[in-house]
Image: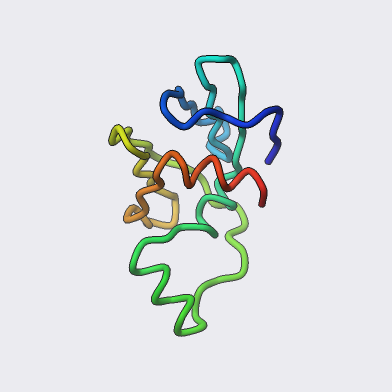
Length: 101
């Protein structure tokens, strides 16, 4: 994961890397943030993942995880992963906050 400057959450474009290992978000002002697929999967806040963390059965890592689909919902992104997980909706403000991890 890398960060150049803070990204505005109102409007940005996103692109999955050719190897499906990361998601880059670019704001209208040119600021760009890249988050790895593993970081995104680790920080999913869907009910299923929150429950798995609570039950102490959430994996510590997701080696080799890939992003297989991204749907822009306006306020956030629904990201689907190669392990079949597709429940995560990542609000744009939350994505911007993940640059610190």
